[in-house]
Every structure is written in C-alpha cells, then in structure tokens.
Image 1 (cartoon, rainbow, N blue to C red):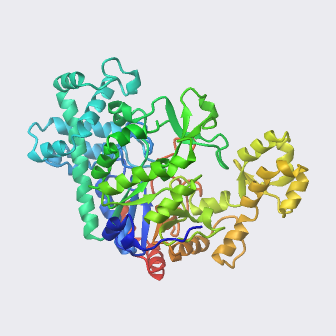
Image 2 (image 1 turned 60 degrees about the vertical axis):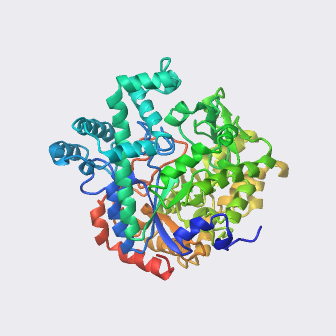
Image 3 (image 1 turned 180 degrees about the horizontal axis):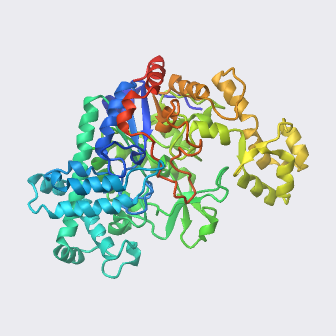
Length: 598
C-alpha cells in the first residue's frame, strides 16, 4: 500500500485546501427534504438551512453536506436529475421571493402549508406541482424584471436558456421524455428555439426566473453560513438523466445507445442498471471539458466543498447496451474504456480540468468496486475519500485524508444496521451460490442459518457453524467450488463480536443497539485520524429520544435498487426550531469537543 500523503501545501488541491483549512472538522449529512421549519410549505426549503446552521454552531459542527438539489422534474430521485445545473424549485421559500410583495399571496401560501402539513414522517411530493402553480401566479403578477435578472441570464447563458426551453417543451408534451417529442422539438436548433421563444416567451422566462430566485436564496444561505464559519458541501452526481436538458441540448456529449450501472456484487447479484447515459469523453475533451467546468463554476456560487458522486466513473464506467433485457440488471455490461491501462490517464485528464475550474474542495465517493488507480489518485491529490465504519472496521483504514462516517443516505442507520443487518448475509446471494452449485436452497439455509435470527432478505448464521471448515463440511462442496460461500461466511459470521472488539466495548452483544453502543461507534469515528467526520443526521439524532416511538427501520433515506414510495421521503418528526433545545445537543457537543473537532 502506498504511503499516505499529508503535505497539503504541495498538492494538486493546495488552492482548495487553503480555503477550507487543515483542521479537524465534524459534519452532518442532511437531505433537505428530511428537515423543515414551522414556515416550510410541504417540504424543507432553502432558508430553513439557516436554522440548521444555527444548530451546527451550537453543537460544534462546521460542515453541512446536502444531498443533490438539482431539478428532478417529477421523478424525485436526487441522483437522476433533469439538469446538472438547475436547482429544484420545490425547495424555494414562497415567502421569500425577491422583487415581489409576497403578503399579497399570504392566504394562498398558508392554505398550501396547512394542506401539505408533513404527516407520518413522510413528504408528499404533490407539493411541487402546487408550488409551481402558485409560483407561476406570482411570476405573472410581475412584468418588469430588474436589471439583476438580465445580468443573471447573461452570466449563465451557457445552460440556462436551453434548460428553460427544455422545460417549456416538456410542459407542452405533458412531461413525456424528449425522445417522444414530435419533430422538430426532439433536436435543438436555432430556428426552433427562436420560434418557441416567440410563441412561449413568458413560459421560457418563467423557468429562467425560477432559477434566478433559487440562486438568490442559495447565495443568501451561503453568505449566512460563511458568517457562522459553517461550510456547505454540495453533492454533484457524475451522471444525469437521459431525459434531461443536458442530454437533449448536447447529445454529442453522451453515448445514447448505452446506459450506466454496476456489475454484480455481494448485495446486488444482477448488478445495477441506473439508466443514465455514459459520457462521450472524447467529445467532451475536444471542447476542453467545458460542459464539466461550467457546471462546477455555477455550483461554486452555493458550495465550499463538493462530493463527486461515483468518483471512479471518471476513470471507467460500467455500461450496458440499451437492448439488454431490463430484468438482467447490469449483468451484461462492460467497463469503458475496456483497457484498464487507459483508466488512470482518462481520470486524470478530467480531474485536472475540474480542479482548474473551481476553488471548491472536491471529495470522492469511492464506495464499491474501486479501481486501484482511482484510490491512488485520491491519495496523491489529497482528495478526501470515504470510510464507512461498518465496512472498514475489519481493516481499519483510518487515513488522515478521509471522511469517516457511520452511515450514508444509501444505507440503514447504525441502529437499524446493528439490529437487522450486522452478522447476516443477503439471501439472494446465497440463492445464487446454491443455483450455481446445484444445491437445494431450502436445504442449505436450514443447515447453515438460524431462521429465528433471520428476517426479510437477511440470513443469520447458526452459532454452531463456528468455523469456516465446519461450514464447508456441512455443504459438502469440493474446495474449488466453495469460494463464494467462504467469502460470504468470512464477511458476516461473528461480525457483531468483531465490531464490539473494534470499539473495545465491554458489554455483551445485543439484538437491538443501545444508545450507548451508538455513542461508542460515533466516538470511534470522531476520534479517528480522519480530517473530517461527517455523520448522517439520523445517526446524530438517534442519540436522543425523537425516534423512540418509530420502528427502527423507518428512519431511512433510500434503499438502492428498489422502487418504493418510502425512498427519498423520510422527514424528521420535529421542526428545526426545536433543534436548538434538544437534550441530545450536550452529548453531541461533548463528543465533538473530546475529539477536538469543530
């Protein structure tokens, strides 16, 4: 393993680190839709984050990591957006619209607030449609736009006008994908654009105006956070939806007969098929990666730090032919470039251009099957990667230039992981191994697994299968066919005991995690050598009592690879105004202070 680099002043990211400072920091990962204030209308709104900033300053937290805020249309998956530039207007505060006397709309705003009062800890995304109707009414009441609006449009003409035209046409075709639009709307050209702007001028300007209002509220938030010495960290997905303004207006930058995903792994036996098209990096490089640079330039208005989602995708992407049956997931895919010797060169070409274009500090999401060259670049460039405690504790990565976390938006919370996942194996993986080896699945699970310690798709091992040799003997498989079962066993059997030893936790294992166990896990993460320790807001708050009456699996943001009405909808059961007076605050302060984090 190469020696870890720590000389920030002599690194490719020296300029970015100079802005952030070489300081141990604590952070909180927050989806905006999961928090809200008493003034919110149906969903968390941008000005609400100021209340979160206040809470952070109180509990010694100086980084707020947000999930992507990009406009998702009516899909509501933050990583499958209709634009990699535009923000989602559902996050606008209706009471803070610039250049408008919002008191004239107070009754309508109050009516929406009552109708979409957050209930059962879930967001009702119908609020977006209703908000847009009222925002259009507000816009129609204003005909003279200030000079600042024209300046904003001019400064962002690279993407803004195309986005506004795309949204206008999408309305015209009842939100259908651009691939289903009638000619000549499918393909952007000057004649079509000019004609559309003439006939639909007010609608085009409305979508530009929405982005201007979002810009105003976001820059106001950033100014407030700057004053409180709190950094805002944005999440910038590498990929964008095929049905997006980016792809529609710049088709040459994408490979449209392919889609992206992941190969099969421990949890996803068919891999994953995301649907977003891969980039045509050759065409992007021919334009000096201008599309990527402009995107970062715009994001810099709002963020101090940015997370590069799917960082390894800069080096190589898993791509699947669109003709491959959907039920096969990512099984029939392949990496591009196909030659691994080209991966590092491609990644460095892209990354160097990204670093040249922004003063924001990048962080790399390096989870999953990461090529060695990508991790080497993170180390050499001093770009923080991620250490998720439940996955790294067995080999204790503990790198200085990293971010330590208990959970992410795609995992269970720590409490749920301990009670329902730790020490178990995915039943789909075991079934796949049985099928490959012509074993009876039912007979196998009866021999190896404790049904009383299993639930859903998680299988818990029988205690008497206490060695790898005993497990293999029970299966009666020849050595050359036992690799998959051995891998499953070594990665899950006795995991709870190993984790308790890692924490140096003296109490006996428990089925349900106590707050004391959670406290010790958080302390281990905060005390680690990593420069940042950023925790999912649900893990911070589960130290207290606000989730006591909620099912342990309920506080979860997303379950990857599933289609569920619960994904991306969880809302914390108390408004932000109550955060400042929570009794758990003292515990969080003490944890951060003892770890010398701010």
